Length: 276
Image (cartoon, rainbow, N blue to C red):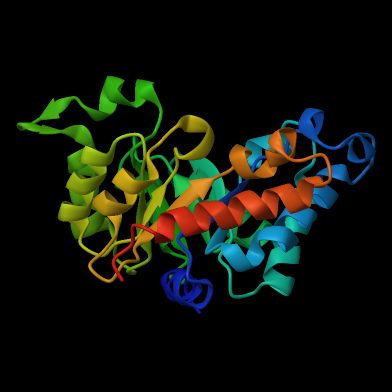
């Protein structure tokens, strides 16, 4: 099953547009996991098990693993999700952006080593930086368009032929690059007007929407701006607000219980504004 079909099935089966980000920071782990050799895997596994029925996808962020030399634990958690929750897509958040043989190796890393269903990509170097990923015809290429960070405006709002650059990216991906029908775009929840503009350009193409939770994006505005006519079309990501909910939790909750509670609350908050 290709990425888009798997994602569409997950939207329906779990009645969820919530994507759970896996950004493991051992300094914020429960004490019993901080010195455990496979503590990153153990932490992520408990989060995955606690939230799998509330999510439409999981999004491990490669830097949080690689900075600690824990790529083997990233491989392990990706394999665990594939084996235990095969209906849920794994999105490798790596934001790669290179060309030629290097891009080919990055694609192998994402799709062979980690077995990801999709990968996030930076389009700054143009089509030939994306093409090697499109050779994997069943995998997703999720391309940065209007990112959730304030500094994204430094480049993404530059006017090109009277339109902001992010809209040109959306048009390129929708009309020229989406050769396999497996492309998606990243558009931040912190910019609902731009989210609506991208939706108008790309039709029903899925959008990965970071920026709610810790970044403060508004759920109502994001859902109303980005959902498709059928009430789907979005992977609304939340990472830290779910992973580290225990810091705000009741004393009788462990970290996985707290993560589950916040994931369910977030899913339900999103669903409250979806088209029925």
